[in-house]
Image (cartoon, rainbow, N blue to C red; front, side, top):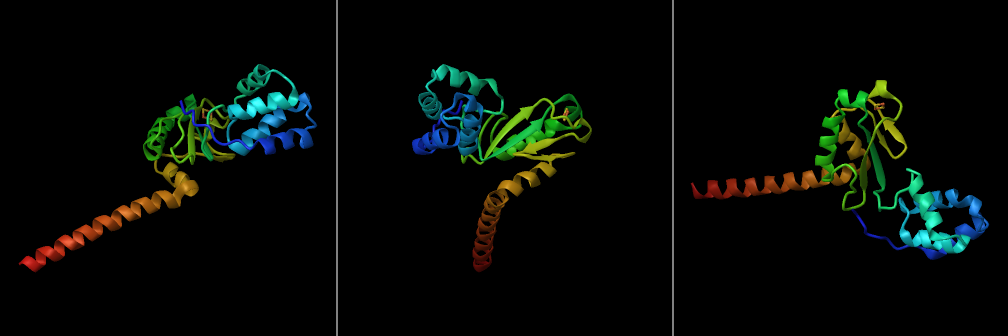
Length: 188
Ligand code: FES
């Protein structure tokens, strides 16, 4: 479980609840949506502030936060990948896509990369079974993807970083080979 909390901007939350939502409990879900959008999850400190500002027990705020799947109480990545592992997607190769994703990102499904760039989650069905395997990244849906295609999708969101690492590694190996050949030829 990733329990790393981030710094919460109290001023932003206080102002948002007062100015945008009139400190009105009726707006609790929208308040939580705004906080979730700001931090990509609901930090515990933020829930305490909501409870204080709305004058309701924190258990009530927590109850709503845990009821809706759209909210997360754990820190999440900037890009949320939802891979469908429902039956239709499964028979079309979702498992291979999942393995490739886990291998590429270095995390298991349910996890978040150390740089907080990606969170990988599996879902049971997102309603477009004939297009499987299907992946959602943030709000965009990608259909009929395979284990090669998924790498291009990941690279699109974080491509430069991955490509750069590979290029640096290749350049490093090439320079070692070059040096070795030079020394080898000099000795002959
Ligand atoms: S099973 Fe994947 S979209 Fe329905």
